Length: 298
Image 1: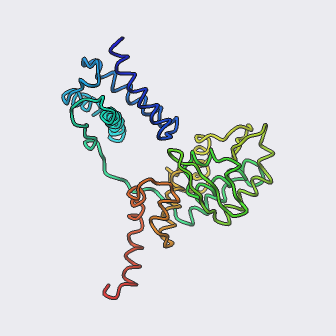
Image 2: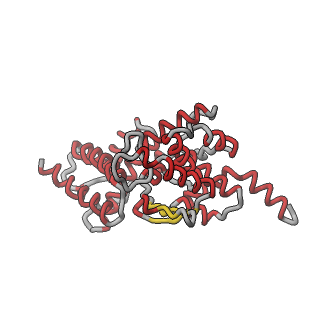
Image 3: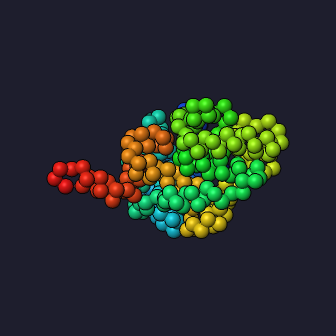
């Protein structure tokens, strides 16, 4: 029991740091907790009673135990352990060993799935606009594509974050970072239509969130995902259309339209431009075409 406590307390301190110093979401903290609980349980069975005594052979055995998982899951668990051990070293309470490598589980990057403009238009016309729910669904689809929001950012969007007079919204993304995003005219119009014609008809009690469920509660991410799947099926789109697919499409279409990569990075709320650069591969042929048309020796 004492050994378990000695392993648990530093984990709790690390999670508190994520929450209060780095502004991590409860979803992120819960994921770290699950991964670190699994690691401490496995390492405890190997005889580890204090993180200072962690050794390379122990890490190797833990890493081997993750081999049956999907590469992305295994890498996430090793990354969580590495981040935790890095935290311990920074506070001079970690093992003397080098930080474990997380690259062994990496899989090749898949290019994000994106929809064409015609497919986007087909999707947008699918909801039943004669109902409050259909108007709401069109508004949230417009927002996911027109502003490139993460699904969590869309369902958490607050009424006081709307500036429809200036066709913009204030979004709080990962780690509590705030950004302003301009809205296309069409997106702004559908949000206004939803607020005027549908929201009060769905609302059961006062709510800070913009989007209300059919039961008058806060709209859930899973509900949006299920509705999107059904609308995509009705529109005859390929399987696998998700809220994140609309975000990908937003980024791809911006780049095709000539937007600067740094600007797209800011709009998406990416911390690193390397995350945004994956979208450039989707538009390589367009880049080549513009290059050949513009370069005097192309």
